[in-house]
Structure formats: structure tokens, C-alpha cells
Amino acid sequence: MTTVLRTPVDRFTELPDFPFEPHHLEIDGGLRVHYLDEGPRDGEVVLLMHGEPTWSFLYRKVIPVLVAAGHRCIAPDLVGFGRSDKPADPGAYTYQRHVDWMSETVFERLNLSGITFFGQDWGGLIGLRLLAARPERFTRVIIGNTGLPTGAEQPTQAFLNWQRFARESSDFKVGRIVSAGCVKALQDNVIAAYDAPFPDDTYKTGARVLPSLVPTSPNDPSHDANEAAWRILARFTKPFLCAFSDSDPITGGADLRFLARIPGAESQPHTTIEGAGHFLQEDKGEELGEVIANFMQRSC
Image (cartoon, rainbow, N blue to C red; front, side):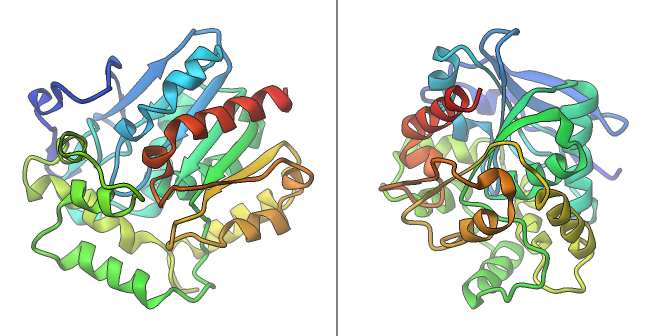
């Protein structure tokens, strides 16, 4: 591993509505991963996975709802994001390596089982690969504003432009990017919280690289692995719920593929969360928490 950056702890003081204690573990020979661990230790586990370019701060409105329902919430920060370590070399980041990092975190270090999974954006791209690799560890699944592309799908020009912007822009302001992905503009202190993990541009390597790791061609290195994951998902019969938002131009309609191909999605109370953009956890976090909690109760 090349140079690894670690965001100074004082960048995370006075985060709004974020009273949660940090937890850390080491993977891959010394990379430090941060995660939240809230709720009773004997509660049913809910694994909450974020995507680009956010961190576990994104779940601050969701977690209290689930903890109040008696559940244990685990929300890791992907490597390169949040309080987790950040390799400085762009070549350190691959789709497979993100899957491997989170697999070691979730299955080996935390040894989670009986998992209710929720993933959004890259949280779904990575988390659904974990599900396909170890389906016996999962009890049910909820996804929102995500997908599992293989590269066979034709990417939109808007997405290709986003890949190029993330890679090449000289002004990559993470907090403003998150705010632009919400229906309601974020307050300045919330924008600052999304900027907190990145003291300067050298810390943003993971965030800049991640969009380019989305498969956009059948020749993509992750094509075969994601096709294999879809074959597992096509046999997944445990409860599977789609909770996409109504105002996300990025993933609108992506739920239809899951509804058509996953047996566990049949006859479930799929919902559209209204008044929410790509980052539905920001726009409608409490409502999303209720959707997850109610689905857990319904499918217990």
C-alpha cells in the first residue's frame, strides 16, 4: 500500500446532530476503518452502507429511529471516506478492492450475521456484492437509489460527464455536491460535515476515483463479478424491498430490474419516498428509518 492519509480527529468536532461514538478496526494489513455501532448489542443487526461521496454522517437521521425500535445499527465508512483511512494513490482503489475491504470488515472483523442490509448509491454496489458472496449472513434487504451495473447497460452522457468531472475538476467540493443531490439545500454546517473528512484535495482521491469504477462497458474488470452476483440474486428468496425516492435523476427506474429478477422482491410493500433526491437519507431520513423498521417487523 502506498501513502495512506488519516483525517485529523479535530475535523470531526461539533458535527450537527451527530452524537455517535467512533469505532475503529484494522483490515488489509493496517488500514483503519471507522464505523458506527449504535443500539443494543443483542439487537437485530442493521447494516447501513453509504456511497459517493458521503460517509456514515449520512445516516444520522436514520439510526435513532432504528435504535428506538430495538435494533443495532452498524454504519461503516468506506476506505477513502469519512473517518476511515485514505490511500493517496488512485491505483489503490478498485471495485473489487472495495468489496474485499468491506467483506473483511463485515464478515471477518465484526463477524456480523442475521443482517438486515440497507444500501444507497455505492453502498448498494458494494453491499449487494457482499450479499451475493455470503447470502446466509443476511436476513432481509432494503435498497434505495442504487443499482448493480454490469457494464452491459448503456451509460447516460450525464453519468459519463460526472465521471470526468470527478476525475478532472479542479474544484471538487464534496459538501456542495451532496447538497446538489438533495431536494432541499443543506445548511452550511451540514455541508461542512460532508467536507470534514477532506482537509484538502489530497484526501479526496477515493472520492474522485469512485465514479470511474462504475462498470460502463462489458469489458470492465467488474463485469464478470457483477454478472455472477446477479445470478445469485436471481435465486435470493429472502425478503427484498425497494425504497427509492421520487426525485433522483441518477437511479430513477433502476428498481425495476430488481423487482423483475429477485424472487424475494415478489409481493413486498415496495415504496417510493416522496420529496427526496439522490441522498434520500438527508431529505427523508426519519421516514426511511420507519420504512426499514416496519419492513423488519413485517418480515420477522
